[in-house]
Amino acid sequence: MKLNLANTVRATIIDRLFKYLEADGEDVGMVTSNTLNFPFELDGEECFVEVTAKVVKKDADECYQERDDYQSRLVEKAEKKAERERAAAEKKAKAEAKKKEKEKAE
Image (cartoon, rainbow, N blue to C red):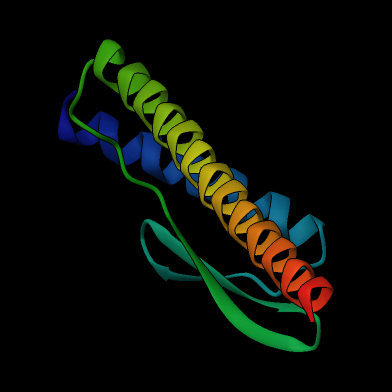
């Protein structure tokens, strides 16, 4: 993609996001030509969110593959977490059973 077209795409996306956030009541402002920011509050904590538009020099297949890879990593991470939690629960159950056996013996 030529630089001029990439710049137009970035400007269009940032403009759309800016208008959307502004219409939603956010105090949005431009930081650079392709970056905007706005304050955000959640549970009494305030922070600033920064959004940057970036036009990548990859073909569509690569971009879709990145999405698929990310989803696969999320699934794998969730499975590992579930396995750790299962192992911890099993360990806790064994410890409690052992404690009950010890109490019965006394």
